[in-house]
Amino acid sequence: MNEDLSAIVSLLTQTPSHQRWPVAIETWFSGCEQQELNELVELLLQQDPPLPTDDEEVNWGRLFEHMLQRLRADLSNGVDIIDPSVDNLCEVYEFLGPASQVRHLLLAMLAQRSDSESIENLVSLLIESPPIEVSGFAIALSPFLQRDTDWGLLFPRLFQALSHPVAASAILDLSNFITRQGKVERHPANDLVDQLEQLLKGVVNQLASIEDGSIMKTAMNLTPEDIASQVNEGIALASALCDSIALIGNEDKTSALFQAMDLAHRRIQAEAAAALVRLNSEAGAQRLGGLAEEPSVRLRVLAYAEELGILGEIHANYQSQQARAEGALALHLSEPHVMGLPPTSLKLHDHSQLFWPGFDVRQDCFLFEYEYSLGGEPLTNIGIGAPEVLSSGSDLLSLSTDDLYAYFAGMVVSHTDIFEMPADDLDSQAQMQAGRYQQRLEEAEYEDVKPVTFGFFFEHRALAATARKDNQYGVVVVDEAGMLWLPQTSLSRLLTADDAYHIYKGRKLFESFEVQAD
Image (cartoon, rainbow, N blue to C red; front, side):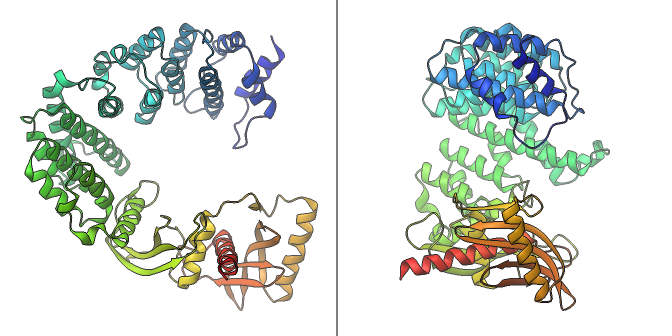
């Protein structure tokens, strides 16, 4: 066996780490012959396929990502793709089995190649043996968003996969995209509009049963995670269906859109209302105008109103910079990886014009205090809506306005001479300086000092740590000029040493901005 191929295959069985693979492996992928890639694929078929419960499946995913990157590079350089063969890619896909969480990357390779043989096999696999997750299906089709192909190879045959729950939203999103971009003369699902309308009614009924709780009468074993997953998938599918029906343009197909507009979920209301406007329904424009009041959908409503030429019907109060910043923060907080739902209330905390990292002139900056009242003690915190959109899991309420701006500026600043390292992974010189800083803290009567981060800010060096002072725990940053001490004020959402370091960086930034302004 080729030594390089042997080394790559051996990596598949190792415990995955968050670190990159050896540079030599990346170099091999960028310079090998296509035939060697085919040999690698054939070797994969001789291995034991990883189970989804195996950590090693991550390594297979990394391998496929390297292959996909190489394929993109070859195509951009005008190289005719011969290997890996379509048959081998399809064989590995089936070899990994339906539960695989990484095999969708092989479908993305077929989509990237975009020749008739690749697309024919891609569509067959998507219909007969689709990826296990919605995101996998979307990734498999994503290359078609960047490059053209013979769309007749995909549609209408690909609509046969609509029966798969993981498939529908990605397929409709692609068909909507190529219609909106003028890549096809009419919407590929034009002849399926009755089917789409019935599908939308079904999704709306499902979401309505979740909203009123009646779903628990027929599916008592559903967990909160199951319900959240159904809601997220339902929102994506309902949005794609609303868009499809609008783009098809049949003004008689509005009954499902009106049903969707009656759901409590603001995002779906906005999608249905915009679709109705496209189908010349005045009710859609009226609903869009009312929805602008809701911060979490305000930006979407304004974008639709501008696209549809009805921005003049939206109250001016909801088009201001402050209103847009409020909407941006509410949307950010609604993201599943942040809070997962809009805040109960938002109110302006501060509006200032400041120099901001990445901008040459002063920017309008907006801080908002937001609250979640979900029973029990309300959760309150402060986020920024412009010029950045950021929030924090730490309690920021005790920070001054200046330090709030410094905190968020420190979070986003990017420069080659501004970086951090874990305090337990320093070279000898940085370790000596960190040791001196820790000694300074102890001499200043800080106790239980635990170094966390060592920072490099241009010519400055700083140590961020947790510590205790005067029997109070907190976080501290020390450099050659002084110390920044922040005592803990929350029992559940503690400030971290990195939070303190963000403030330190932000203070340094604003000091430099003022010097430059003078």
